[in-house]
Image 1 (cartoon, rainbow, N blue to C red):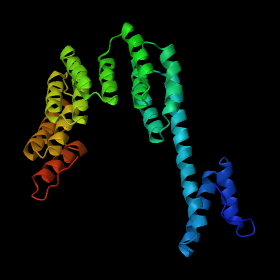
Image 2: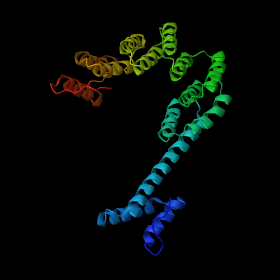
Image 3: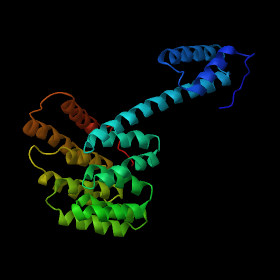
Image 4: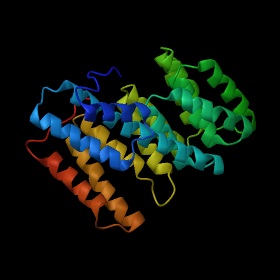
Length: 284
């Protein structure tokens, strides 16, 4: 960052500038002091672009620091427990937020090599490969991993690559064949539904969600019910969306013994909103 002032003009601003530049000197106490001082400067003169620029840099530093801490904590936990799906998902969210896909790849590649049957790591790495259009690496990993365990997710990824390469028809064929081959797998059917919703084939998506719910074990998975409720609203089918929210309430009671609390209140609010004469539907 280029300084907009000299030491003679404002020692306090220069101190904050140096503090941000050195980064490691920003303790929690220093952060609070710098934020309060810069906001005070702006309250007296909102045209002080030097103070405004420093405040933006200060907040960026805090975000960088927090993201770094989150990522390192997740990585440390994954090294101790590579099959922990929650930690791997959290790491992916942290890195994707900052578009640090290369860091994800550098971290997951050696783990996938040393844990060739760890599908949590492999599936996470495949997602990033496809996002970064590293299709050759993705295919090689799928081919290698399928020899030890031919998981349906690997097949879905082949369809994802077709779609990313511009062949929607090719992707659809793979997803449909995967759904037929794994017709009793509720998770695979749900994943297929999400993919068809993504490409705008809502009727097929609804069918996949419904089949996923039917094939899911007791207690019934709720994901497909929520997905159908949101999708019905997206399709401007208010009555069907209301029916889904009512089904959600019934399923929570029957399968989980939940009759009150935020889950129930949320469903009731959605029903009330959808039945309101002033309801607004999403155009997405």
